[in-house]
Amino acid sequence: MTRVSIALAAYNGERHIREQLDSFAAQTRLPDQLIVCDDGSSDRTVSIVDEFAATAPFDVAVIRNPENFGYSNNFARAILQSDGDIIFLSDQDDVWFADKIATVLQTFDRHPAVQVVINDQVLTDEKLRHSGRTKLQNLKSTGKTSAGMIEGCCTALRSEWSRRLFPMPAEADDLVRTEDMSHDRWINELAMLVGRRVVIARPLQYFRRTGENTTSWLLSEPGRPKLRKIARERQRAAPLSAWHTRIAVLDAYEGFLRSHAVPGDKDAAFPKIAHERSSHQQRIRLAALPLWRRPTLVWTLWRTGGYTYFNGWLSAANDLLRPRSP
Image (cartoon, rainbow, N blue to C red):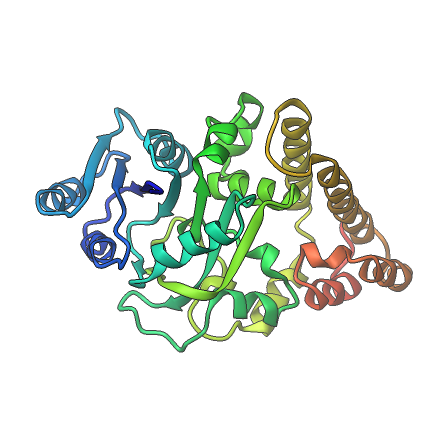
């Protein structure tokens, strides 16, 4: 039988972690192992996990980091300690639907070559109140595709993929340290590049937004995206540093794929990387041009699919209207 592990990264999560743990125990297909890596919590997080472990219907291991490793490195450690054939990643404050594990395993069974499966999620506030909006709905409402669905808390991967990708190479250390590269982006985007990821469009969990989440993004907030707010933020100034950083991330992907063996179509990955890199370079050039010189270049970037890496038509509109970068 397929062995299932859950890798959970914890840090000062006493308010909500028990509810998440209980949702694991309520699965129609129970996990075989739960690995909790605690990154130096100063509250009752570890005690709550220990209490749960005493009666859990599966193995639970708690690993206390000797120092604070940070979000991505903590997850990487939890992944490396997991021995399941399929490894589910979990945040400490969400709630899984009862059929999540069973549904994801069925997807892996139907797609034996796939290395990563990611599911949609219902966006909620701290008390799990929601308007029915999901992350995929919010992405698509702004012109993005499912490629923008990166959340680690919705991700499951084969052990083969984890062995190939972790530990992350030393060349990526600076990007991880500055939080420009994350474990979930590493897992998901490399899988997409080589054609080994499947998206389950049905939500399989609640995604709790507490105001203290490690990651924050307008499209992850409960309810319909506030397009005017997104547009205003993008119009203030071109995020040149973010675009340069993204190019550095793409360079890291290309270097890794050229020097490591991974399942999938590596030959198809390099044109994808080149296209996205070129799209970022073109937006950097656009930002330095006067407004009257931009329409033709914006149209060319739109026609060639360059804005699919950004916020679709919102990004195209911003390139036409935002002030010239110095």
